[in-house]
Length: 358
Image 1: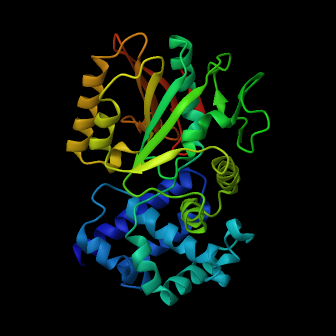
Image 2: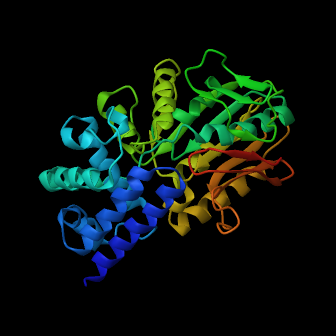
């Protein structure tokens, strides 16, 4: 069998396993069957052929997720009514593996040419749930510095997590955030994040290679299509975040992170604590870009002062998957001056649950 076809089927099956672990039985089933279809040179392979042969997914699961997002986009746009009956995101019900797969395969076969250009696009999930994992880091910086925050996000997509301070977070009898926010995180935490801290955001900005505009129909459709169709709680968070985005401005520059971060950190901002943050971004960057970013943080950190401190907050994949089977991501915080680095939390890929450690 063609090596590219074998590799693509393997990618789909690997993502199927992760979808099942992350409680998406619909996507787990469809990806497993799609892998069989790829091996049989069916319509799924017709859609993925060009990208697979270009080797555009050397880093892992992105091609599988882009494929599912492309089909989901068809469903949300009303172009796959039979499949929509099986997608909870459009009011459908997933019950039968065989009938769901038949509807999926038929939709793919009918829309091969429509799907190909969407599969080429990068993942733009902008997972709102990750704010629950990051918020504790922002609050620790606010507590330590007593300064308003200047927040800069790498890989910001639509910038929804740049509005983290307009969401509501609860951990037991503790709460932090906007009590009337349409974005609410309940029953997420193990442990007690620092929800007794006051914090304010003075400036918010991000960068992305292909920013999404949440104010447009096209942008909102792109964001919704990247959410897994049977995870309705994630849809609720996204819809709430889109409401907040309409009220709270946050600019996202079309820029490469390796150039944008040094530019933003070229001079310390007096009277503000600068926090550069990102979530599930590093595995999408080449090694040289990751090295350039770390160098930029270290260089800027060497010029940080008590009146212009710097923090680097990140939620990225863990290197101990065997020990953290259902919590494969970690939250780390590095602060300057003085360069203190510590692990804050373990969390799921979508920001749930959060095991607070700090």
